[in-house]
Length: 181
Image 1 (cartoon, helix red, strand yellow):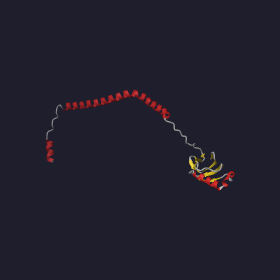
Image 2: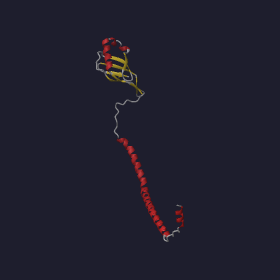
Image 3: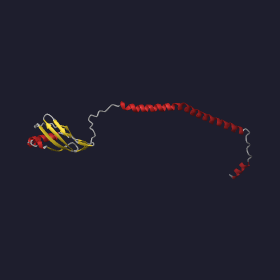
Image 4: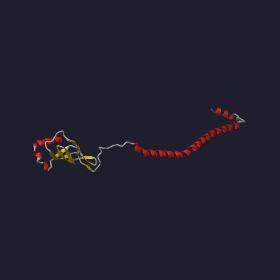
């Protein structure tokens, strides 16, 4: 290996071609021309986009903003109104209500009862006001009233939308029913 190195060093230097300098200058010139054409093409494209889009930018943004504003103002009028007939107002306290009357009739012409209802709308207890105690002394009438109360359905009282226990006074007449919370 050392012998090969010495032999290569002993070789005379190779002469430089006479046209090498000119060939290098021509190659550099061609490379520069290619680079310049790419740069010119990019610059032209950039200039074209800036010159064509910049004058349209303000009207386009204005049109888009106007369209959004009009859409936002007109959209609420296009919706159909929802009728909320069964909606109850969110008051502090809403008393219990009678939702369904029992299937049995009463033999008495007039009867008033005070009911206590739980959170589910079930009757916990009932009482008869002092003015009606004479009517409730009849055992048959008491059974009929209790059967009626078992089949009645109630909507419970609500406090801020949460179900709670409540009291309800109902007056039952043969011709009509009066309910007071």
